[in-house]
Length: 148
Ligand SMILES: [Cu+2]
Image 1: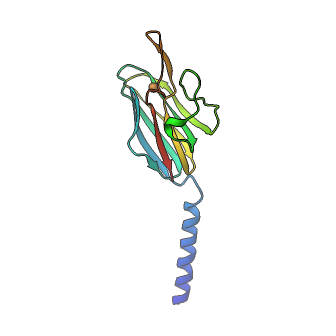
Image 2: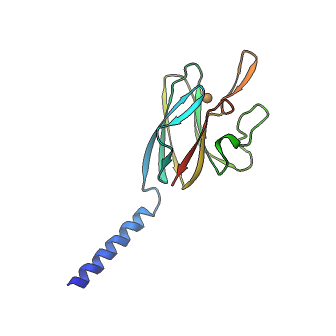
Image 3: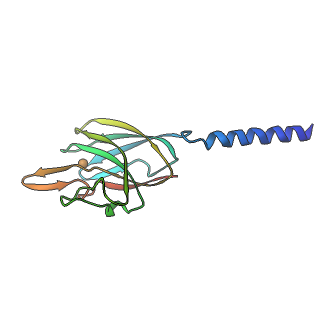
């Protein structure tokens, strides 16, 4: 009797681990503030699985976007094009997806299947402001993000 219960318990435990290890088990929502010039997620570490970013553009003036990049590079060390934007085809990075540019005062969400690893969240908008080129990435819209 004792032995049977022990075996049953072990089987249930293994089944439970199997489900958890199947991927897609975890669903996490992370609020992210976009502003001039910063990307501010409410948490910087999430479990692997389905991750929904709820991005709010707090401006005050510019449209912003949120690009999810998998990379082992530091947030400020991503490959760039001559205008200062991240080269999305560059060495050492993989663009997973993005929430496209949207206006101040609005919130947009995007859901991505993220494996464990190191990521960087950036806004990769480049605009001309009074004759000067402004790359939001170069101005500080970048932050590390870890999936465990
Ligand atoms: Cu931006």
